[in-house]
Length: 86
Figure 1: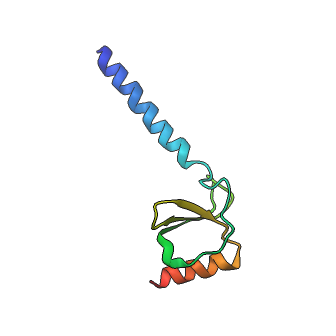
Figure 2: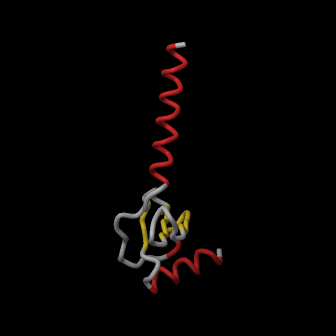
């Protein structure tokens, strides 16, 4: 019974930790230097909502880094458009 209680506690903590990370903005700061879309491996667009007042664009580059881009910048809009045409 004791091990079941401990297991339940850890499972609940893991679920709450996952929920906590999803209910906030993912981007603290945005990358401002333009770059070519060929370096983008993945692109995610997260619309604004109760978790975050801002729309967010997160790209994963071919070298493994993740960057947040400002969706209001013209070059970012062009990069997203080019990436979606692939």
